[in-house]
Picture: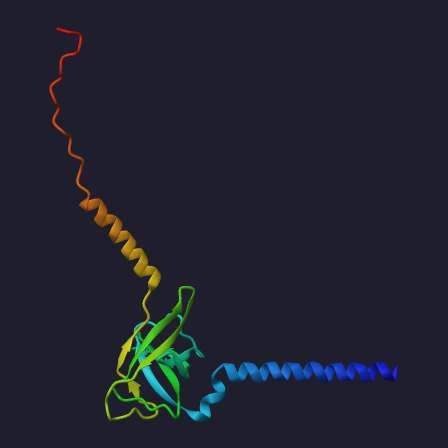
Length: 173
């Protein structure tokens, strides 16, 4: 009986260790662990479809931070997004922020395009140049429906050729 309880205890400790490892990994991947080495930057967008807390913030395709919060501004009905940007990445004040789709199946990230200003954004500053997400499905439906309506309007009605006089039959008369 003693050998069985020791074995069960060892397995229990192993299971707890594996669970702790998964929690550590999940915490690191979520982007929340980087808060001590980041600074917050705000941006206001018309649409943020596909962007959630934890979504990546990229410059030239390289991850430099994560979305740490998003909320609806009750006065303007726009989305206010807080970005946690790595402390070693300094952004010019004329930086542009765009919501970019990760692919056809959903998901999005925030792409930053640094400008040329000498003045850098400080913690809690707001990026003034933004472009919200594009509704790809709505855009495709609009293009399809307007293209179909346009092609119907441009297609001319078939013209009938004038009737030719009947030729006499070939019976020799």
